[in-house]
Length: 263
Image (cartoon, rainbow, N blue to C red; front, side):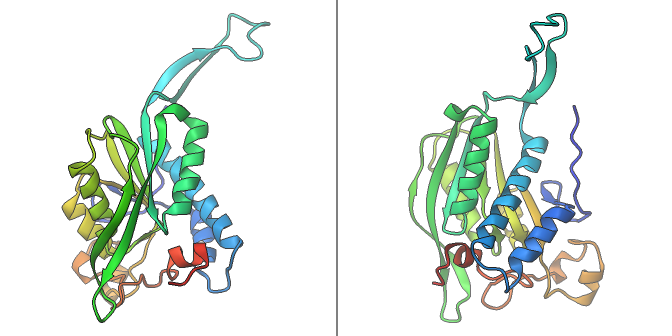
């Protein structure tokens, strides 16, 4: 059984997938609107991450053939169900990058527990904070603490982080897993609602093995030539971050709006 990913044409590399999904983009546009408030905000985030994770699973998770009975097998034992399904023996880790990633990771954790073997699914937690200079420009990321539930050997490790802005948080988190946490992961996957060209350039250079899935790439401050071309064709002329490293057009701080806490 083959799955065909619906994605836009771009020049960011084969591990970057910007989805061509009108429903998801409609939800995301509503989420980014200044007229959208709680509880609609978290409802939209749940819809978006449920769809984004399902798409990622269809394209990335290992599958196996099964032969099993159905409710009709007693009447027709000659025709059991033969189907290709996800290989539930696969270990899965979803990482909560607090605070913007807390609710998205919880949504992913719940879905994964209902599809895969719950005994092989876990949720890790990392507290990451932006480091900024006097001009409020991001200079790096501080990892304030982590609760890691074991090694990641032969695991698919997922980072559901809504905004891929500078990429510093994800780079620091991946560094931590690869250098500190034991085991060799099967795959590292980032799930984003919005990414910038700056983010993609940073993370693909430092972690080329990372698989990236996003609903939208925002590059609103790019040159006219870059905006008229396919994304990534004139990567050096693309810009999606303002001087304070907020995404444009973006949707503001998702960690702020999801938690109704503007600090």
